[in-house]
Image 1 (spheres, rainbow, N blue to C red):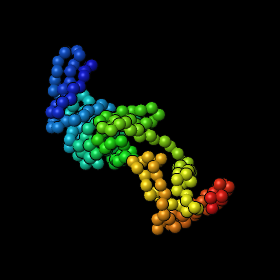
Image 2: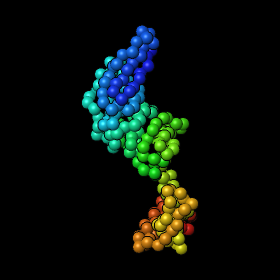
Image 3: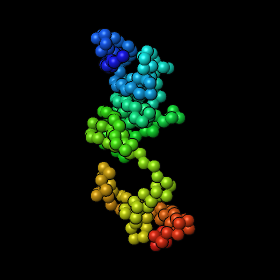
Image 4: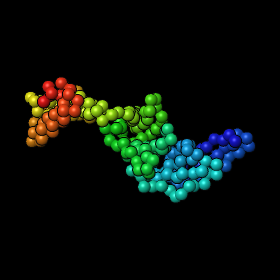
Length: 212
């Protein structure tokens, strides 16, 4: 059976191409968004979401409102994972029932999400009221991850041989950052030194020895 689903703020309606009929299949309050996937229909509201059977449209369980933010603005199924947009960021439901929560300018241009869609190469596109953000998943070893932070330290934090904090950074724009002295620079420097000693002990990398 071929049909279209139409959502408004109070109901979900199915239109059958065979019978040319409209039929209300679910009613609720403050409905905001909808997605199909995993043999479910997911209907978001301003206070959580419903899971409906894809054939009967009967609710599977109660309204689920224990979320990072229950005021939902978007929902999508990507690679079998359930993604939500809200008035306070985006989040993905994990297989263990918990959520990965993406909030703030570290992740998104704005916390108010408009739409979520699947991108290329395991990326998730998140449209917000201030632009388009991208969540990128990349598998790496512990060493690869350590080298990401090592590169950041060498480029941005070494000042006169000390590991220094960034004192000024405007809206995440790296061209605006400035380094300054802080009481904790001694601690960060000693921790960095120990990390390079361990690195040299394990890998024999000459660069680590030079850093020491």
